[in-house]
Image (cartoon, rainbow, N blue to C red; front, side):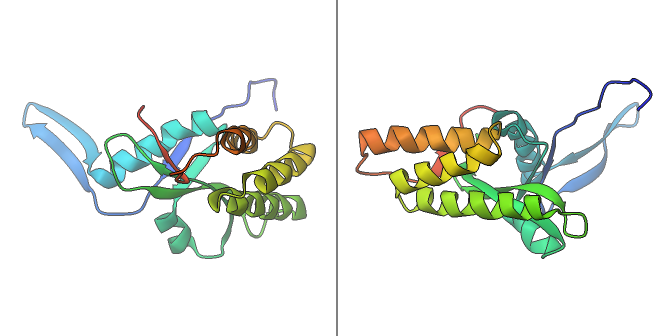
Length: 168
């Protein structure tokens, strides 16, 4: 449109309590928001880089929006500074505008992810490879396939589907 470059952004959404308002002194105020909810949303915004996504949301947001939107589960992560893991999802589209391809993408990825979470790494690898035939540049699928291949070779005794992140 008009020869301008496309503007791309990353968004992280979480639902919960926070404090919003002007903070500081009468001579120097800063309008901001504070709290764990805000910190987690900020971490999700940064995680978009890792996953090659634009909008990441938590399970709390998924529950709040109901079935109004097409989302795909991506991972279970423990972000830096938190011990509690959260399920994260990619917001794909609203249901009214979601295409059959959007819905198929979500379904196929979720099937592969379930195999991964239950430790069926060879089956998960096959499903992620099948997924990548249709969406070859999908970063979450590429990463999960590589992780499954690594796990199937190493056969760890104590494995968890939670990805512990140590960067902000």
